[in-house]
Amino acid sequence: MNRTAHPARRWRTVSAVAGAGALHLCILVMAALTLFPFLWMAATSIKPPEEIFRPGLHLVPSTVTWANYVTAVQKVPLSRFLLNGVIVAGGVLVLQLLTVIPAAFAFARLEFRGRGLLFGLVLAALVVPGYVTSVPNFLLLSDLRLTNTYWALILPFVGSAFGIFLMRQFFRQIPGEILDAALIDGCGTGRLLWHVLLPLVRPAIAAFSVFSVVTHWNDFFWPLIAIQSAHLYTPPAGIAYFADADGGANWGAVMAATVIIVSPLLVMFIMARRQFIESLAHISVKG
Amino acid sequence: MAYLLLLPAFVFFVVFKFGAVLYLIPLSLEDWRLGSTTRAFVGLGNYRKLLVSTEFWNALTNTIVYTVAVGVLSIALGLVLALAVRRSGRLQGIYQAVFFLPVAATMSAMAVVWRFIFDTNIGVLNAMARAWGLSPLSWLQDDRLAMGAVVLIGVWSNMGYAMVLFLAGLTTISRDLYEAAAIDGASAPQQFRAITWPLLSPVTLFVVIILTLRAVQAFDSIKVLTNGGPLGATQVLSHLLFQVGFQYFDTGFASTISVVFFLLLAGVTLLQMRVERRVHYQ
Image 1 (cartoon, each protein chain N blue to C red):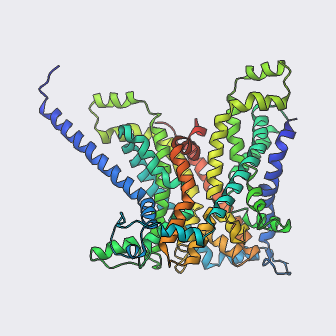
Image 2: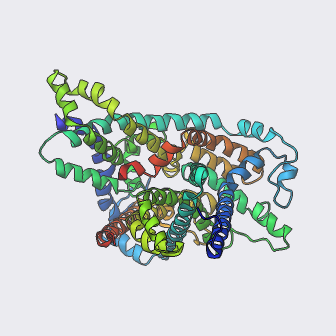
Image 3: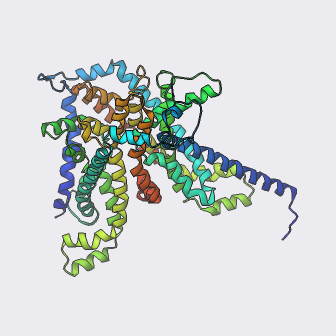
C-alpha cells in the first residue's frame, strides 16, 4: 500500500473530515432545537417563581423545587385525567381488536361473494377523516344519551379500517399449509383463529396496538366535543382545560402538570423506540 | 361464516362512518341550530352562505398556506435530516428517536409548552430577545406573526415523521450504486442528483401525501395557541368546523363545511393518486 497520499486525495480527506464535523454539528443543533420544548418544560416545572420570571435563557435552575408539582396535583385532577385516558384508549383498543381480527381474517383467507366490494368499503372508510363525521356522530350519541360518557369517546373509533388493512396483510402472509393442517386435524374456525393464527400475527397486533393507543390517548378534538364535564376529560383535553383556566398565572404548576400528562407516552416511547417509530410511521405496512 | 366475521366491524363502519357521511347531506340542507326546536329545509342555502362567507374563504386560504408551508419545510428538513442521520453511525438510533419524539408526544400538552415559550411577557423567546437588546414581539397576538408561530410548531412535529419515512426509503437504495458512482468520480451532490433523488421519488411522493393529509387536519396546536386568532389569522378549516358546529351550534352550516372539507380531502387524495401513477423509476 502506498502511504504517501496524493495531494488531491489528502485534500479530499481533509474536506471529508471537515464535512463530517459540520454535519454532526448541524444534526446536534437541530436535535437540541427539537428537544428544547421538552427540556424547557421539565426545567420550568422545577423552578421557583422568581426564576421563572427571570429574563434570559436559563435552562438549568439554580434552586430546585418540587412545589410546582404539589400545586399541580392539588389543583388539577391529574390522576383522574390519566385514568380516563387509560379507560378510553384501553376500551377502544380491546373493542377494535375484537372486531378487526375476525374481519381481517375473513378478507385475507375466506372466499365469499362481494369480498372485493366490501374491502373497497373498508378502504373508503380509511380516507374519511374524523372531523367530517363529528357533527353527525355527536347528534347520534346525544340522541342515545351517551354524550358526556366514556362510551362517547370509545364507540366512534371501534371500527378501524386501518386495523383491518394492517391485519389482513399479516394474515395473507401465513402459509396456507398451516391452515390446511389445522383444518385436517379437525380444528374449528374459532379455535383456528385463537390457537393457531393469533400467535402468528402477534407482531401485527403489537404494531396496531401502539398506533391505536397513541392515536386515541393523544386525541384532543373529539373529547372537547363529546365531553362537557372536566372530570371525564382525557389527558390532552384535561391539560388544555387547566392551562386555560389558569390563564398563565402560574406557569410553574402548568408545566409540572404538563410533565405528568406527557410522561406516560414518553416513557413508553423511550422504552420501545423502534416499535413506536415503525407503528406510527406505518413503515411495516409498506413492505 | 365470512359475513359473521365481518359483521361486528361493519356495524361500526355503517353507523359511525358511512351513515355519518350520508347523514351530512340532509343536515347540510337544513337551517338548524342545535337545541332549537325549529328545523327548516333551506335547500342549497347553506352552500350559498358558504360561498359568500369571508370566514370560510379565510379559513380555506389559511389551511392551504399552513399545509404548503408545513409540508414543504417538513419534507425538506426531513430529507436533509435523513441524509445526515444516516451517516451518523452508532448515533443513528438516538437521533431518530430525538427527531421522532414530537410525533409521539401529546400535541395539545406540548402546545401548552409552546404557548409558554411564545408568551409575550415571560416567554423565553422574548426573554432572549430582550437579553440581546431586541424588542420583544407578540408572537401569538400579532396577526402577522401568529401563522409563522403555528407553522413552526407544525414543522417541529412533522419533520421527524418525514425523516423516518425517508430513512426507510434510503435503506432500499443499494450501496453498490454509490460505490460505482464514486469510482466514476461522481461528487456527493452529483450522486444525490443521479441516484438518491430519482430512486427516492416514490417515497417522496408517499411522504408528500401523508404530510399533506396530516397538515390539512392540524387542529390541536391552533386550538391551544391561538383559537384561530388573532383576527382569524390562524383560522383553519378544522378549527372553523369546531367553532361553528360546537361553539355556535350551527349544525346545518357546520355540516356544509364538513361536506366541503370532505370533498377537498378526497380531491387531494385523488389528485395525488393520479400523480403517483406518473411517477416511476428513472
